Amino acid sequence: MADFEKISEMLQKGKAKDVEALVKEAVDSGTAPGDILDKGLIAGMSVIGEKFKKNEVYVPEVLIAARAMNAGMKILEPVLAESGVKPLGKVAVGTVKNDLHDIGKNLVCMMLKGAGFEVMDLGIDVAPEKFLEAAKNGAQVVGLSALLTTTMPQMKAVIDALKEAGVDAKVMIGGAPVTQAYAEEIGASGYAPDAASAVDEAKKLIGAA
Ligand code: B1M
Image 1 (cartoon, rainbow, N blue to C red):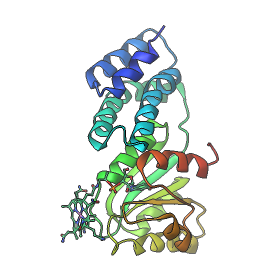
Image 2: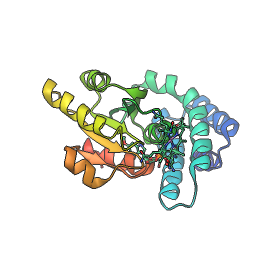
Image 3: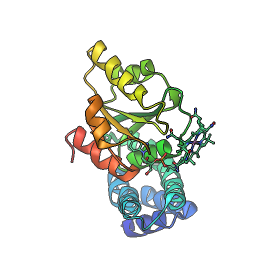
């Protein structure tokens, strides 16, 4: 029987090597990969997400936990692909055009992956056409990050591009200067103030909350 608690605990402590070894052990012992993901890795990352929301842990701890998550995922991903476990949904995330800030965006990607989403990381300085393309390629949620007041209007440009093309994807926005009021003003489907809330919001937007 795999020790899910231990996987979760080591992930929260950011012990990448231990997580990798425990996941390998669990896979080798024939544990269902979906269980290793849900009860071990995702369970651990959820605890980190909740603590991050409450300011009980900070960005460095989240990054270290995410690195441990990635170490486990490296072992688990091929097994999951073979076993046909479906991701929760597909989200494309990027920092908007003319904006080069990516620390928050990376955290959002890690948390979404940690929650079981398939994440297309579009990078920084992403033009509206690239977000549109991602939505056409199956992203149910398009996630936009902006850190500059001068680049926030790019979020509206993405929403307009999606509308014009008649593509029905939800748009979730976030970033230090972004607010719920701004999301409402530009017609975004959702807003999240931090990376852990981005998971809740994405789940809500695809009807999985
Ligand atoms: Co820049 N910068 N910066 N910068 N920078 C800010 C944003 C600024 C507030 C600093 C300041 O003046 N006090 C200011 C913006 C002012 C404004 O517009 N109101 C600023 C400026 C002016 C600039 C330049 C213009 C400076 C210059 O060159 N004169 C320039 C612009 C470059 C460009 O983008 N074109 C610039 C450059 C840079 C660096 C390259 C040096 C570096 C970025 C490095 C990198 O990202 N790889 C940088 C940094 C590090 C910052 C600060 C210090 C920190 C940003 C950060 O990473 N925070 C920032 C000051 C600050 O915010 N205190 C500042 C940590 C991160 C975890 O938080 O990104 O907010 P954040 O993400 C959070 C939430 O917002 C949310 O979740 C995350 C985790 O909880 N979130 C989402 C983010 N995206 C989300 C998406 C979602 C949901 C939630 O859904 C999709």
